[in-house]
Each structure stands twice: as C-alpha cells, then as structure tokens.
Image 1 (cartoon, rainbow, N blue to C red):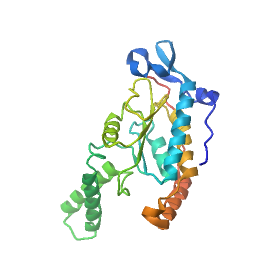
Image 2: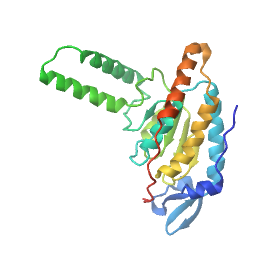
Image 3: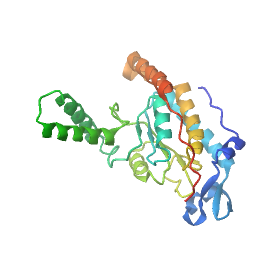
Image 4: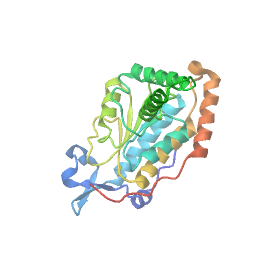
Length: 261
C-alpha cells in the first residue's frame, strides 16, 4: 500500500484549516478538537487534524486496494466545485447539487430514476409536438440535475467522503443506517460521533477543503485496484480510463471565502 504525504502543520495553518466557527455556534461534542478561542472564534487543534487525516488516508488507501466505490458529498456553493473536481479525478461518483432523501436507503428508486432518464433521452429522437418536446426536455433536465454525478452508479458505494457533516447530516444518517463507513471533513459546529473517520477542519473555504481532499484523492489514485473477481479486467481498464480522464479535465478550485459564521 502506498502511503500519502500528510501536509505539515504550517501548510494547514496557511490554508486556514484551523479556523472554526464562533464559539456560540460550535458543538460541545467536538471540543476534543478545540485548541483555543480567539475573538469568539474557535481555533482547531491542527495536531488533531493531522492525526485524523493520517488515519483517514490510511483507511481510504486500504479501501481503494479492495476496489471500493467512494461517493463524494458536498453541496455547499463555496466548495461544490472542489468536491466535484476530487471525484472526477478519481473517477468516482459525487453529489454536489443536493442530497435526495433515500439516495442510499432507497437505492432501487435511484436506479429506477436512472432507467427513466435513459428512456426519456431515447424518446427525444421520436416525433413530438412542441409542447411535448418542451415538457420532455424539462423532465430530463430535472432528473439530470438531481442525479448529476451518480448516473454511472449501479451499486451502493462502500465509502462516503463528506465535506461538512453538519450540512450533509441526511447523507451521514443514511450511510450510518446502512453501515457504510464515513470519512468526513467537519467544522466545530458538527457532532463527530456519527462519523467513522472525522477530520476536524475548516470546511467552509475551498483552500482548506482542497488541501485535505487532495490527500484522500491521492490515497485513492495511488492504491486503487479493481475487484477482478467481481468485475474482471474490463472494470479495471474502465477505472484506469476514468482516472486519466478525471486528471485531464479537473479544473482549479474557486478562491477561498474567508467569512466565518
């Protein structure tokens, strides 16, 4: 298993990883990761962040060796592009628009929606009145928006990688219910208890999130092996092409937003 180099404390500090929420908005259940309070803002203990990131990266690497499907989740406007970029680089599915209730716990419905989308797209080639064509296109656009990032998924993911466990509490709850391990970057306003591998960090700026996600992305890319026994060499070649395509088309992240809640 290839190990991933963890950023130094200075690198994390310069990326603003240490900035938490205001004290009154922070969750006392996350206090083990608190370092201090300055100007009413909680400062995160970066040593705790580094140790948590090390454990999470090792777990992700092990899962990648077993050919796991990682579902990236992050729907906040400020970081959705960063999350999408990370997923595309690894050829993994993602949810960045909004989390649909039952995405995991009612996965058969999701698969039915994907089938419906395929049927509707085929139907575009048929003759329709102008009104029918408009209605059909609207329905296709709606489904594409809701399922963007998971259109190629045909089975449940083995690992959830979440940015902001507080914001994505529904996704966390569904994964927890199904016993799917959760790796999450979470700020001081989140309860870390439902998360298997919580990484305490500023989850509101692209610079902080990018720094941490890059480590998890490297752990996947450096260690991924398709489950040959289940999917054969064809799946391995497909994933290799996805990784190459993802690396080629990944776009730079947005500038960080310094505003704290």
